Amino acid sequence: MNEHNQPSVPATRAFPSLAEAIKVWARIGLLSFGGPAGQIALMHRILVEEKRWLGEQRFLHALNFCMLLPGPEAQQLAVYIGWLMHKTLGGFIAGLLFVLPGVLAIMVLSWVYALYGNVGFVEALFYGLKAAVLAIVVHALARIGSRALRSGAMVSVAALSFIAIFAFDIPFPLIIAAAGIIGYMGHRAGIKGFSAGAGHGSSGKTGIEDADTHLGETIPAHARVDTAWAMRISSILLVLWLAPTVILIAIAGWDNVFTAIAIFFSQMAVVTFGGAYAVLAYVAQQAVEHYGWLQPGEMLDGLGMAETTPGPLIMVTQFVGFMGAFREPGAMPPLLAGTLGGLLTTWVTFTPCFLWIFLGAPFVERLRENRSLAAALSTITAAVVGVVLNLAVWFGLHVIFRDVSAWAGYGLSLDVPVWSSIDPIAAVLVAASMIAMFRFKLGVVPLLAGAASAGLIAYAAGVV
Image 1 (cartoon, rainbow, N blue to C red):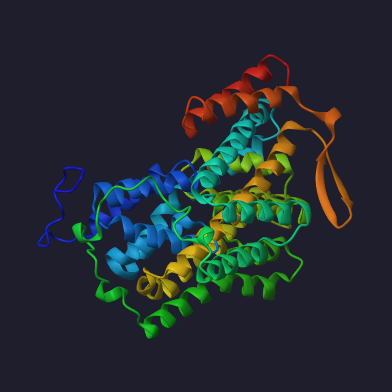
Image 2: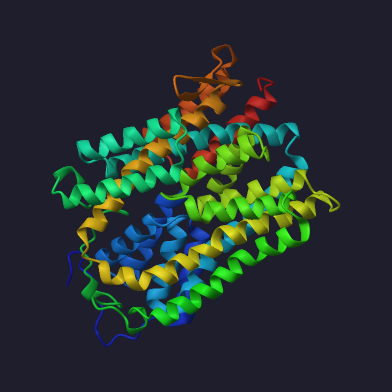
């Protein structure tokens, strides 16, 4: 008996069938609210504690690898575990069922937003949601920071990361690459502050050993390194991922909005490391400031949609692509153009997630005891804390203030608030959302529902 007074998985117990796996992954997909932290905790509870598919250490090892990859770590973790359990087909099923509910929900909400977003009560609804979203981002920052910043070295990495992206506009991929190198070299040099193990926990230790699970301690036969298989499946996925972009360039040219969407989000899939909140900082800056597909407030509206629906938080990119194509439809009906833009965004964003896992996971399974790699992952997480802080500041400026100005000088580039443009109602909603989340531990869905209701009340009272 283990410490939870539950029997270990007997060696003779039948391995979970693919049909059972489909039910489990569909359940996870439908319940995966609350951003990556909540989704990872959900998978840990169901797959490790309840189903005993794999043990604590194997789960954390897979998560550490996914944290190193560009893109949504929760969805990639689902692909990884699905592949471990039921080979390639299991990986595809897990990854698709994890994102499908979010794809459908965000598409429906995008239609509603595009058609009725300028209606007063709809604007009031999202007005309230923005305050809650800001509180959620700050809460995520606190959660990540409490796990990642366990030494002075990690705190320094986070602070330098924030300064680099907020004040100097240093590209996010360079920050992450530098953090990984610093962590790896710091551990190799024996610097205590860069010891592995900070920052990737899911929901606390359960004491469930790998040996007491369906997978056991050994590497499954299909998960052993097979270079020929890895190259074959990766080549297929690479073609599926890039084919739409190549076709669009050939048919529509470089200046078409669909081409721009395909190229931008394909690039994003390669360079956005560090989880959903870090990715959103990059997407928000580019989609708003460079391409002009939507306004800062609309980006927050999209994030509110993603927070209130199941699936990866990065599904907000579908809303971004939808709005970009909706506003530049060409000869198409705007709603059709937006739908195609959103689906194109989702395709080029999530297809490479399967590529990264199927290409790298067999090799990573052999590196479960590599402490230097684990130290690099922990240091990357510390850098992500700084990047998420940048996202929180950026969102806060655009929620609480109606006007933000740019200031540049001495090599710095800063967004600064116009203090006379402060929105007192928004400030009160943000403060109330912060108190509800931090003091009273209110869940994400009740918080969003309450904030949206407050926005509607403020609209009915004529104060917004």
